[in-house]
Amino acid sequence: MSDDNKQSIVIVGGGTAGWMAAALISAVTKGKLGQIHLIESDEIGTIGVGEATIPYIRDFNRMLGIDETEFVRQTNATFKLGIEFCNWVRHGHSYFHPFGQIGASVGRSAFHQLLLKKASIDGEMDFHPYSLCCVAARTMKFASPVSKKGVDSTLGYAYHFDAGLYARFLRTYAERLNVCRHEGKIVNVDRIAENGFVRSVVLQSGDVINGTFFIDCSGLTGLLIDKTLKCGFDDWSSWLPCDRAVFAPSEKLLTVPPYTRSQAHQAGWQWRIPLQHRTGNGYVYASNAVSDDEAIATLLKNLNSPPLADPRAIRFKTGRRKVFWSHNVVAIGLSAGFLEPLESTSIHLIHSGLLKLLDLWPGRNMDPYLAEQYNQAMSAEFEAIRDFLILHYKLTEREDSDFWRFCKNMNIPNNLAYKIEHFLRSGRIILTRGDLFQAPSWLAVMLGQGLIPETYDPMVDVLDTDLIEGQLEAMRREIKEAVARMPIHQDYVNLIIGG
Ligand SMILES: Cc1cc2nc3c(=O)[nH]c(=O)nc-3n(C[C@H](O)[C@H](O)[C@H](O)COP(=O)(O)OP(=O)(O)OC[C@H]3O[C@@H](n4cnc5c(N)ncnc54)[C@H](O)[C@@H]3O)c2cc1C
Image 1: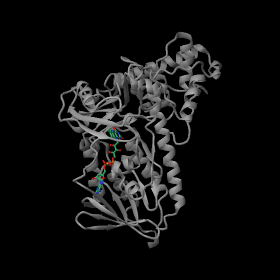
Image 2 (image 1 turned 45 degrees about the horizontal axis):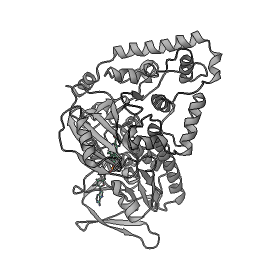
Image 3 (image 1 turned 90 degrees about the horizontal axis):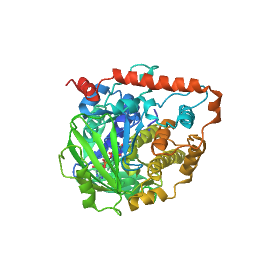
Image 4 (image 1 turned 60 degrees about the vertical axis):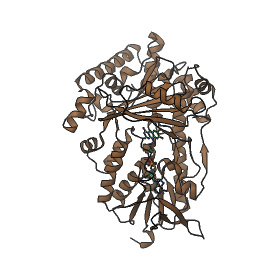
C-alpha cells in the first residue's frame, strides 16, 4: 500500500464509543492502514450508563468474531426481547415494543392490515399475541432461535450488559490487535495553521500524541469536534424536553426479565435494565418540570429491588452536532450528539457511525466529499431516530401534568406528522431515508400508543374473511406453542454461564 494513505489514527476517549471504535477499526484494518492510538483519562472516567441495546449489537459482535457465550459471561449480560412501556398512554396502561417480526403477511397484504380488517369486524385490536417476542417476554421466557425458517426465526433479540465490563472486554480485544493505549488527560490540542487540521493532542504529563486522523470519542464534552473545531449543535429540546437523568443500581431481580422496562412518570420516564448481578435504573426527566430532589425520590420509590448505591445525576442537551466529520476529525458516540435512551439507540449509533466511516475511509488527503457523504448519512439517521422518539411522547393521552400536556400538544417535525397521518388514514407505514426502525417497530409503537387507523388497505378485501381469521388463528397458536417449549430466561442465562 502507498504510504500516502497510511494514517496515524488517534481515538480520543475510552468509553463504550472509544473501545468499540478501537476494536472494530483494528479488526478490519489489521494494522495495514496505520497505527491506532487510544487515549483515556482515569481522572475523567466514563459516563457509566448505556446498558441496553438493540439487535444490531449482535452484528457488531459477530464482525469482531466474538463468541456469544464468552460475551454473556464476561459482561454479565442478559437477553432483551424489546421494551415494555408502562403509563405512556395513560396510568395503568402498558404495551410492548418487541424486536423481530409481528405476524406475517398474506398474499400482498401486510399483517397489520389483516388485523385491522379483523378489528373492523370484532373490535379486537391487539398485536401482542402475534409477536413471539411479546408472548415470550410476558412469560419471562427466552431461547436463541435455532431454525432459519420456523416460527422461532421471527424472534429478534439484543442484550443488556454492564457497560464498564463491555468496554474492558473490547479493550482486551483491541490491545491484542496492537491498539496502543495511553492513559492521561488531554490538556491541549495543537492544530496545523494552514488548514486547521488537528496535528496532535498534549497530555497533562507533557506527552504529545501526533495523528493524521482523529476520532473524537470524548463523550458529551466533544473535546475535538466542539471545544476545538466549534462545529455547532442542533438543539432538539423543543421536541424532546428531558435534559437530566438520575440513576442508581439496585439488587438483582429475583426473576430476571428478558426485556427493558420504561415507566412514564410525571415529567419523564424511568428505565429498568436487568443484568445478571444487578439492575440498572434511571429517571430521565425535564428539569423545568421537577426538581432534582423530586426526581431522586421518584426514582427510589419505583425501584423493584433495594438500591446498591446513592443516585448519581447527569445533564444533557438533546440534539446533534451540525457537522460530525470536520477537517481530520470524526465525532462518534456522545460527542456526536445525544438522544435520550428511550429506545436504546446510542450504542447503535456508534456502531452505525463506525460502519459508515469504514465505508468512507479517507486517504491522507482527507477528501471533503467523504466527509460530506458521512455527514449527510449520519444526519438522516439521527433525525429518523429523533422522530421515532418524539412519536412516543406525542401520542400520549396523558394530561395530568404540564409536561404531558406540552408533549401531547407540541408541534412535531413534518416528516413525523406525515407518517402519523398516513397510518391514521389507512394504516400505511411510510419509511423514509435514514429510518433505523422498520415497519414492525413503527406498528408496535403507533398501535401501542393508541393510534388506530380509520380504515384498512382495500387490497385485504381480495382475501376471504374466513381465510384471514384462519391464518391469524394459526399465527397465534404457533407462537403460543413455541413459547411453551422455551425455557425461563433466567434458566437459559444460567445454562450459558454454567451456573
Ligand atoms: C442517562 C443515560 C442513559 C443511557 N442509556 C443508554 C442505553 O440504555 N443504551 C444505549 O445504547 N445508550 C445509552 N446511553 C448512551 C451511552 O451511555 C453512550 O452512547 C455510550 O456510553 C458511549 O459513551 P461515550 O464513549 O461516547 O462517552 P463516555 O463514556 O463519556 O467516554 C468518554 C471518554 O473520553 C475520555 N475523555 C474525555 N475528555 C478527555 C480528556 N480531556 N482527556 C482524555 N480523555 C478524555 C473519558 O475519560 C472517557 O474515556 C445513555 C446515556 C445516558 C446519559
